[in-house]
Length: 431
Image (cartoon, rainbow, N blue to C red):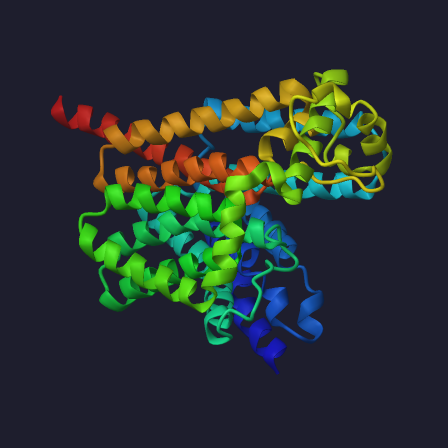
């Protein structure tokens, strides 16, 4: 029954997408963030909703191409294409052999294509905010239920991530939540209706509970960054502090001793086995890149046992960095967006990746300061905060190919175009 109801609700969006690809884009991002497959039990779990919406949206764009704008061919647009091409060549020349390499590439390819569609279809403020609402409601399902389970169980429920998504463990889920937290505050500042505003603020509060309940140390560091950035921007600072303190107190009271013990390990990282395992993977990724400076070893190369064992022999070359004294019986993830790209795509790939982040951050800072509209400036500030927390917390997580970061870069390009058009219109009016 549950599956039938969902299908009946889903089908209208399929037909509406054929008339307007923007509707398909909104439904597409909702399925990415909500992961409806996890909510269903019967026949509907076998349907690939994201792929279906992707195909129909692209078909709709071909049918309605006369009404579409061309994507803005900015430097970020070309850098994303270049990064995709570089990663593809890296995988073609990869070290080791595994179906996982091309599975990761397929997800990354879809993320870049989605970003291109965002640049093409999000042409107005209304479209951007409608898209963001679909995104926030989608991830809000997981935030609401995971946060509620944690509170109701008095901390006995472990937040381990979301199955069938890129948010598959507690650390990745925590970072994903932090990447939407500023957007909840942005939308709360834009909507007129009181209860909708409270809904967004409530999900923002539960986001804090989820990050704390994830026991993610990287998430905790990111939460401090996001909290400080939002505090600097909000007008009602006292109200913000009261709300933030209430949700943090709720989460900490439930499981204060265990959570405090977990966070205290940050002070003794050199003795923490998990952190030492990360530094080991970083060393091996660096050794791999030194041998293959242009294209690296292909996506997830260090996780191949043969590649791991090959470079583990030379781990002593970085003795000045403490690492885990372990046997080389299993390859490990890089646990860093920077070392992940370094091992996967070499120094050249890392340079392209860093250039994308740098230009995105610089663009967000410029729009936040000089945007022609107040809403545009506020959204740019939110994305700037997201980029900051992604670049900081991402240093300890393998999240380089997460689709949301490329979606947000696409939105940045969109608001830059709107800003340029507004400046041009202003000049025409003045003349």
